[in-house]
Length: 88
Image 1 (tube, helix red, strand yellow):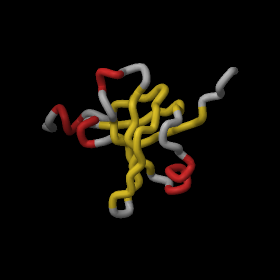
Image 2 (cartoon, rainbow, N blue to C red):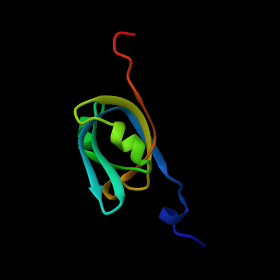
Image 3 (tube, rainbow, N blue to C red):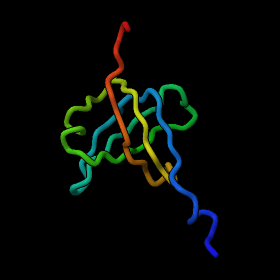
C-alpha cells in the first residue's frame, strides 16, 4: 500500500510567465517567475536543467512555458519555454 501523496505523479502548470530573478545555487540553475494569469499563486521558483537555456532567459521578459511540480513550495522543473511572438 502506498500513501496517496507518494503515488501521484507531477502536476503541470504554465502559461505566460515573467522572469523576476535568476539564481545559481551551487550548480543548480533557477528562475523565479510570476504567472501573469494567476497572480494569486505568487512567485514560483523553477529549476532549469540546461545552462544554455538559463543563460538565454532575460529578467523582465515574458515567455510561454510549461513546468512540472509536486509542490510549488519546493519548486518546479521547467519542461518547455519559448518567446512570445509580439504582434502576431
